[in-house]
Structures are given as C-alpha cells and as structure tokens.
Image (cartoon, rainbow, N blue to C red; front, side, top):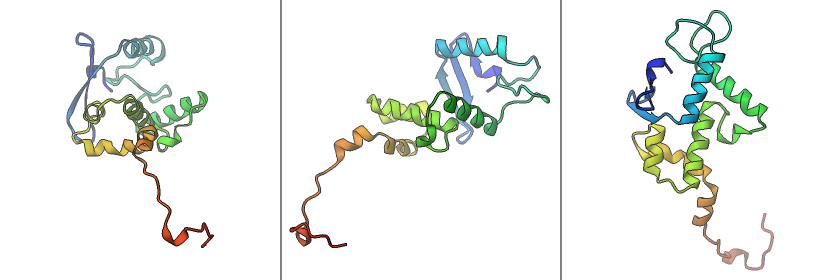
Length: 155
C-alpha cells in the first residue's frame, strides 16, 4: 500500500485490486488511521519509498506478499489465534475471518462481496463453508433406511 492509497480528507483507502485490476474504495476507520500514523511516526524506518509498509532490515524495500504472510502468522501465533482454519494463516485468513464474521452477523452476501472487492458473489461463496451456525439451519434429518431397519452393522 502506497501513501497515495490513503485519502485523509475523505477518510478512505483507495486501492487497485491485484486480481481484478478494479479500484476499490474502503472506509479508513479511525483506529486504522491512527495505527498507520503511529507506525509512520514511530515504527517505519526513515526512507524515501512510496510504500507505507517497508522492511526494517537493509536494503529497505516494500514488504511483499510473503513478508506480509509471515508477519500475520507470527502475530496470530503470538496472540494464541489459530488462523489455519481459514487456510494457511496469512493475510487471506484475515479476509476469511472478516467474511465469516460478517456472514455470522447477517450481512448480505452482495455487501460482503463488495467489501472483499469481488465482482461476483459466486467468488465470495467460498466463505459460506465457514458459516457453521447458518449451515446447521439448513441441515435435514436423515431418515432410517429400509436396508438397516434393525440397526444391524453392515460394514
């Protein structure tokens, strides 16, 4: 994410989605904005790079996908959070956790798709498998089969 991605006047984060090449505009929440400012003032190495998040070891460069995955996994592990239920536990786990949380709070699928930057709700449907409480409501009773009326073990 570049400094130019943040519109401090409108309180938005404006990014081009890597897969779709579409612009996505997200609200810049107060807590997020304050955390970014804190990082820039006290945590970010002094450098002229246009990227907000940079490596702290020379040579200083933008943090790439593998570096971000390592950071997310490390902090999740330190916090005692098992993100592997959402995949490998990197940044995608954060997207999955957000989508699951929104689903559990009855946010409509089209809204979740828009938040995640998906063009089609079918792309977002992968997160439905994680919404166990709503899936349980869809479950049907399994009838007794005639071939096993006497509960005989057949295997």
